[in-house]
Image (cartoon, rainbow, N blue to C red):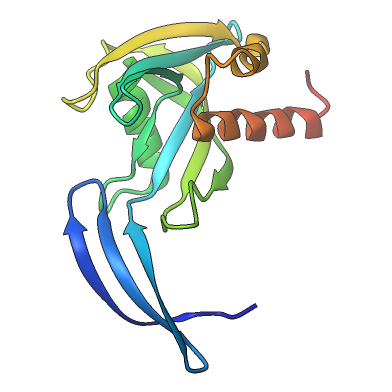
Length: 181
């Protein structure tokens, strides 16, 4: 497998969400170009209440022009570590804080053209400390579902966000590995 080297890169578009670069690549005299979205890393949080219900977030998604059912999550801000971002997103989107945190996995959202990663955290020991505030641009409604019902929500197409499905996959792997169900 050839390991392409970036000879140079030019920015085609820059925003707070991502930067679009055209990379000029080379490998042993062969050349090609690739478009790459340079995006901040993301986090997802599976918030589990003491009774085993998961706090879910329903919010409008402009890309598909309809609401989706998800877990809290978002971008890691510049200079912020992933654990702090997970705690911030949980508070912003649900009004909860957690005393227990566990990182359970990481995925590349789409390595074909995006260079970031998304880490998944499980939050337990939840305490409601306020109302969901969002980031000023989000429209959020909270719902809960028993953890055991999440696979059915995915199977019925009620949860379709790929990163959320990956998060629950990692959670299920951890439960399976621990012999818990």
